[in-house]
Image 1 (cartoon, helix red, strand yellow):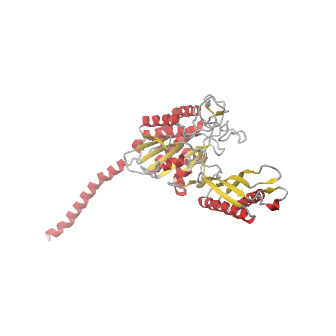
Image 2 (tube, rainbow, N blue to C red):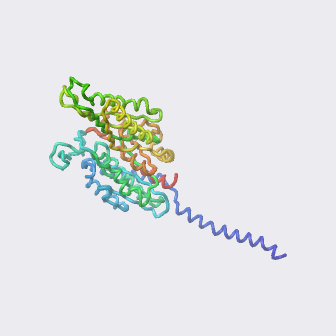
Image 3 (tube, rainbow, N blue to C red):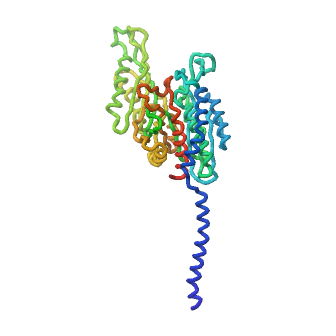
Length: 449
């Protein structure tokens, strides 16, 4: 009986010892997941701002065309190595990947910047304006075409380098892995895969596998410096081009009944294509655009030609709608041509997909952007019919792209020179906001906030 009475006491002692043993184990686990201090992030961003400005001005003065970003890539790689990143160069041609491993388990978050400039002769009058020129064949020379960072990619690279330094400084507070993607050729090269598509094919989203990806673009919408604009789902349109060859039967213009007039058939097709948007597409779900931009056929006024060729562009904001519209363009052209005794051959050149902001990811990360700009966060901006190859990453991993306002305060929309203008001059005061936003998205995603 005495042994039985002692048993509860022994059990209590064992349980007490177990609790005592568990306490230091829990404390050790918590020590491996330190809480993140955003004030340190902001301070680190402010410290790196002078370098961000210098990087931006240097890159702006030395733009390089798509897949020719060798100088830019070398600058990026050198800076990342100095910050302690594992660097891989030559990805998809001139792409650079920087990997920051914290040594603690966690997700992999990717941040992206594009590096290429445009064949635009700069008219900003800046002290660091580009003086680079090319000949029409693309070789550097005293040629006729200027080079310019007319879309703000110099800003993108500089801000991501700034965020890279912030994240490296705060590595001890982070868990997981940061992957920085500096890609070539967002503007693309005609009839070739663009930079992001090639980066995905080269495996940039693997080894380690990316869990979420973020990017920004300056301008696009004329928002004032200090604002961030974003929307869930389709932010920027898909961009597909098409060419339709209409073949009839050539004859004398005075005797059209002896042939099949491809000019008339082409006119019918052009009008028919517009009914795809106005009568066959649910525009309450998302807008769409079909534009015929070229029409070529015939040699003389009194000859019905054998063929007519037209080409155009298709813009849409929903992946399913995009697929339906392509099918409808093909069906409309072929059936209208057949009804007149002609034939229509339709070819598509698939461009950029819809820039799709993953709804769950976007909702999760809005507080991060709000912390950076407060009420200047615009969360339901209209979509834009321009396109971005960031969309290729979103085909494979949850992604979010946002717009950074760079229009100086007090500048009217009518006086503002937009992206791709020779006078495009984004406000450098937005650089700090961009650095903080990119770094905040990375650390908050890694911490699960």
